[in-house]
Length: 228
Image (cartoon, rainbow, N blue to C red):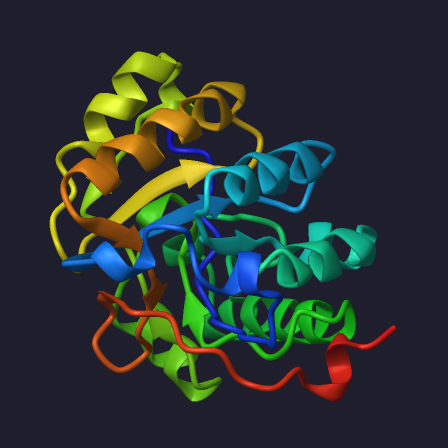
């Protein structure tokens, strides 16, 4: 089964030139959304390092429980130029829960991420990609746009780094790819994902809450919540 995918809320901040604009930004003919679910975790720092070293930014769909347990890693995600989204608090099968339980999962995650310094998410990824009208309506009540994916890396299913690179090669302008914070193979694939995107004139962008598609990043001021 797909390991949960933390729904996406986007936060932006004032970045250093290296984080704000990948080296190949001038050559961007389109944008794709790289997403990593289930963080933050003990693997987050290495993942952030790999992304930054390769000029990539991504949306991190965090679980609320993990964000509450590792607030410094949430701040590290934002400091590295990533965007933070909501992926529920405990990664349950939301479609099997009552409306009040769904509300609790989403609300507590909003609070945990904001409290950890990740800003207030605007994007939501339901665990396992499982959703229905109730899940979508509750998310919308918190100002969240539901984000699934166009390309599944299959990292949760043991896909090799080679297979993950091949999956990324299917991305087209505006599309979104599913990966996971804990996947060593996804992390190992990052340099070649970056090379492949650059060769096709594609850059890693943010996900628009309005359209649910990947678009060019925009930098805004750091909010007080991001300060320690």
